Image 1 (cartoon, helix red, strand yellow):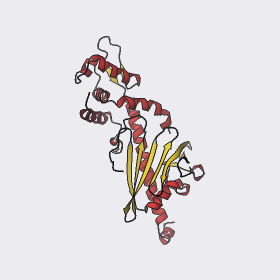
Image 2 (cartoon, each protein chain N blue to C red):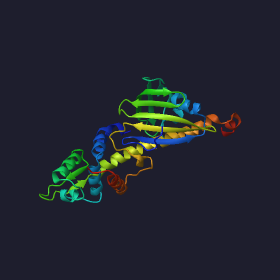
Image 3 (cartoon, rainbow over the protein chains, first blue to last red):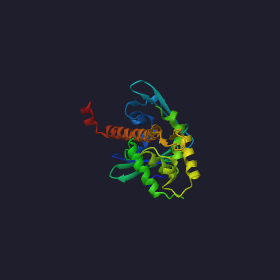
Image 4 (cartoon, each protein chain N blue to C red):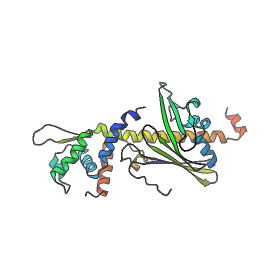
Length: 154
Length: 120
């Protein structure tokens, strides 16, 4: 993948891990690993709630439990692509959003993981999201201003 | 999590904002209320053309118009924008947290056995 600039309606997140690519791939596809890190801070992802069938059309489900109040959020998806150990893609059943994880061996036991999300609700999710964009309207307005200045108003 | 609940509304918001003219209108209204004439000024576009864009923004709830006879200034409903922006921010945070925890997990499982004993 050559693009670092997401198109409209897409989000990209990248991180480099100090681990061989095969191991990172296993972490992203095996419930015994997923249970350790899948839920974001403040949640847990119990092993018995994880379903992984890593082949095109196979299910990928996780239940994230909120540590504070015990509320549960189930993510239901189906894999659309599995290329060991370099690519994993799934489509979320509810939102239709597709998430593609690309693993690149950087050498020296380091692996880059790029998460590319397409079909994000609507058509305006742009790179400012990755920069830690805040809810300030002023900044949003400034950003929109930049956009309009670039776009031709035909 | 409220992600799924608000998604339908967000969809309309993002779709409305996919158009550069409508984004420019929203950017202008973020600085304060404005009338249709004021909004139309920077564009080489007829008033009916601008009105059509305003209707799209009004329908999805991004802007509202007061009933002051001939002025009818347009007002930006910032709450909806905040909702859209916080969806993006929430999604970003989920992946940032997930990556942090994966990083820690990879450290844990790659630790040599003797130092693992020490950590416990």
